[in-house]
Image (cartoon, rainbow, N blue to C red; front, side):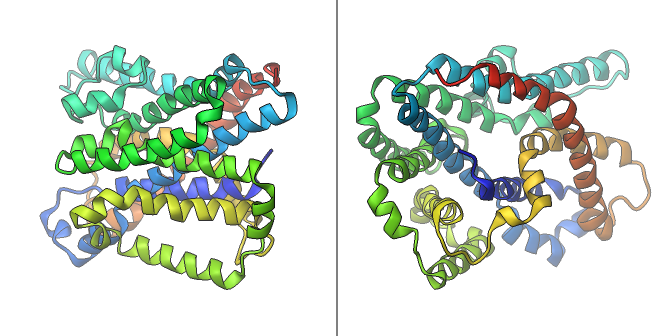
Length: 366
């Protein structure tokens, strides 16, 4: 089943991540300006983008698997993994190749000293997030972002096994994962690397998305009643969500709120997914904005390429006069990088990703 209203939110989640990465300057005057302080306090909230991606992934993956069970009474774990690999792995490994080439070229052609990349064993095994927990983030800039792909691949692998072999325990297992994630965040409260990068800090989001899909497929009578949520309720929830975004750092500054941040995010995003997908009355529908839908479809490329574009842009423009003026830092640089990222991602999607994705049709439901 294709959920037409969930493409655009993928792009908006990327946009939140992008905004956190896009303002870069070492100019002390700019960094102490009111514009920069506003950006840092209200717009640098990329974690919200990751919250959405993990909840949405849990929902979609669970839906795909349960729908296969519904139609065939079977579930092919091998085909499930192959399909996931065809979507994620080609671009992921291409970016690793770019990283290796950049390090080699910088050292052997340009004679520069550059930050290294993590050992390939961590990258190839999709455990980069645990490498960061253990060794920190001091390596090639754009590869740091791929910790989130490691988390998702770990969850994909575990989810397939869970729904293949212990499907009857799915609901209690998801509840256990949510509780485990909260307990872990309490224990890791003052360990920032573990708190942000450890998979246990994120599995609760994935499990919440999975529970939402399970409920929507298996509880039809309750689903039919909830489809008629009044528009005023939807409006109220979205206003709360906007306020939550606008004052995110202020709201989640205490220890208690830091612990429950993931939980509140799952409630907001779970509601958004349900409202956009199943409700009969809408305040608005993301699926009615074609350009945002397209950007959502290419959002994996936007995510993978944007760090690389930032890296090249910063290197090629560092000697240009005026590149560190406020108008360049807050407007010209972000817009230019955004446009370049969309252009490269669109080409990648059309000529590289989509042809490989088409191979998934060979692995039809078993």
